Amino acid sequence: LAELSTNFSNNILDETKAFSLTVDSADSAKLEGAPASAKAMWAQSHEQYLKKEGNDDAKIDPETGPWRITLDGPSYIATLSHVPDREIREQIYRAYITRASEGNAEKNNVPIINEILKLKTESAKMLGYANYAEQSLASKMAPTVESVAELTDLIAAKAGPAAYTELEEITTYARSKGGDEYAEDKLAKLMPWDVTFWSERFKEEKYAVTEEELRPYFALPAVLDGMFELVKRIFGVVVKPADGEAEVWNEDVRYFNVYDVDTNAHIASFFLDPYSRPADKRGGAWMDVCIQKSEAMKRDIPVAYLTCNGSPPVGDKPSLMTFREVETLFHEFGHGLQHMLTEAEVGDVSGINGVEWDAVELPSQFMENWCYDKPTVYGFAKHYETGEPLPEDLFEKLKQQKTFSAGLMAMRQLYFGSLDMELHSAYDPEGEETIFDVQKRIAAKYQPHNLPLPEDRFLCTFGHIFGGGYAAGYYSYKWAEVMSADAFGAFEDVGLDNDEEVQKVGRSFRKTVLALGGGIPPSEVFKSFRGRDPIPDALLRHNGLA
Figure (cartoon, rainbow, N blue to C red):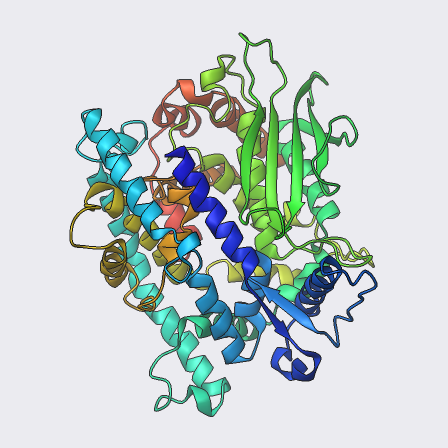
């Protein structure tokens, strides 16, 4: 299974690297309106390609091109979000959703998926479980497949109608602004490569703020300073740069030490690898263990790896982050804090070890909430050139944007989670139904407003469940989201502007959720912090779905 998962991930990486689309200078009109940061990224990609091919003197002007669009995360998202040319968006989208599938026999993940599912079913039955989902849930907080479905359908009942309304609004906007090619008699409904583009335009007009307008206020060095100030304020820890104290694998990588405010003791360290490097680094963002705290192994200082795939510096500019990348950084730092601030001394249950999979996202998703807290944001949102703070009207719009397309996004996550659970609980790898039949069936329930294309091969790149540890566990993002929203509600209850009370609640969160590790059931850990079981009210309220 380990070998199959590795091959699955390597196929995705190889297929992602293998594709590129070069837009020549003569076709610059096709990229008209694309942000300067995206054009700089694509120009830099083409420049690096030319140098790799032996043209050491290559120098590409971001304004005149050529531009090389790839399938790595930042490039793909920028294309779907900002390129006005429908043909380019369609070409990139179709290439993205068919990676590592039947189109390339050597990199085809379909047989790998079937073999993984077959072996997991066999191993589960050998251990006395009916299926792999049952085995997976035996070590998770959710008691049964039915309980997961119950929470999924509870949220879907609120999010589904909202998703329909949101897509109708985006479609109406596209038809009013997109010209003749979006007329109803020529385009019955928006295609998948249209939805993101017009959603972004609608959001920009509705809130009069663009991701590109915000980027200059989110320079990575300042964001790090603000994030470290937050954890000092609420958790009582100080983070200090320690570059040079540990060997790193790339010049981009930073190293930091963590100290307790009260004792000044060095309690943890972490590596941060912040930027996308499509040539040699897989996409996504993750936290991993470098050194585990363990009394038996005489290891008192846990060390974490924090990896993101954010926008790299371009020229003499620092990394200017999208707000989504800021949230991702806070998310991964939340994982890192649970690893680093553990007080459990038995290695098998210290930090994130032994924490039930559907509870392990609690600290990470909890940290994302602070990206909408004014004192926190104004601790880092300063223009990288002038030092001017983020204008207040932009911050207010940023908060309003949080609930934009909340229904569509929630239904997308419920779709992924239900698809994962169905494949691991009811699918027969040797039966007549294919994995793509299952995908269509689940999509009809959770994505009826935006059904995937017949040739969609998303499952071939569903790395979370076939190349990572989320098999029969993808639902845990939503499960943990309920807990994380409820946990943040404890801070809201005392008043986010009440610094003294916020610090008290923060220290309690550190001493329970972040400190106790996997030796205590997460339901008990949550109760020790919140005083009761989690409820979904705060999540629905935060998402505007109450």
